Length: 363
Ligand SMILES: NC(=O)c1ccc[n+]([C@@H]2O[C@H](COP(=O)([O-])OP(=O)(O)OC[C@H]3O[C@@H](n4cnc5c(N)ncnc54)[C@H](OP(=O)(O)O)[C@@H]3O)[C@@H](O)[C@H]2O)c1
Image (tube, rainbow, N blue to C red):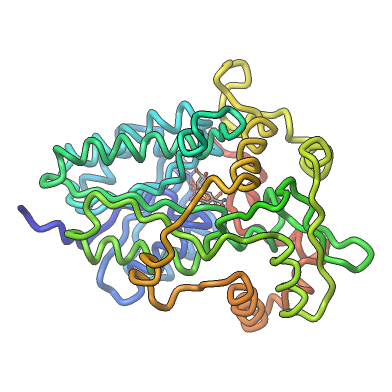
């Protein structure tokens, strides 16, 4: 078998919430260089990538075969996180498939696919769990592992399966943005007694690095990551312990949830460039109904013993994450978490680029 150790990695989604720590983890010690794809080389996030070291930029869209070919040809590794909230589910699947095919043709040696759980399947093909931005990735993840059974010596492949970023519980314009009501930090979400398998972005840097550092073991692997299953009553209690300020979780019906801060977008396509007249396009309401149902019914599981082995220093509890974030925010001059979730401060920052860009941009 030819070596699947790589040196230069083409990263799709590099300026995103997930991409920034992933790129930092790859280039931080100079072991890898990165070619980062972005639609706008002049954005603040694209410029911040250049400050990380061995990063160069390719300007263009993943929805352009010539651009993909140029990026994959210039590299021997690939990290692909296609933004389904731009494309919608159907278009995401097409371009994800083309990424794998073109990467293989252009001689990439190791391909890591930024994946999410195939929730519909894991929920027994029950439509209550139909979540376009999960299923669109999860189906392709399975397809990639299937191709990999015959292609594994020519191009290794691994899935990196994440989940909702922990950072989103203290960020604006996310499905779990908190409000402050009568001085109490409040998460109103339709979660019941279920738990969200939240992921720490900081740990994504280590996990993705591990996949590229260990191609023989990672080839054919689906590395499914999380901190722990987070119940929001526990999130609120941990927030109180860490900040000394009151917090609560209010279980909310789906109707009330979609009549809350998300009301204006509830009936719009989940993907901002998806065709609203295409019957396959899921609305924000339909998509996030499945999303919350999967957590409410504890559909998604993780192998925490494996994660301890792959990343012994990983963040293991929501409280540990909150403590680190409290300290990190203070050191970065953002203030403590209590200050950061106050409405006027919260609006200034979004962990998601899509939030920063206000769901605008070309395909
Ligand atoms: N939010 C979560 O908790 C979470 C968790 C796991 C996975 N995901 C998935 O991750 C994907 C989004 O990435 P993110 O979470 O990092 O969000 P994000 O912060 O909003 O970043 C979106 C990224 O996608 C890039 N992008 C969008 N359209 C593009 C195009 N046509 N061509 C090239 N690049 C394009 C953006 O680059 P430019 O704007 O610079 O072009 C940016 O890097 C979605 O599919 C989402 O389902 C999200």
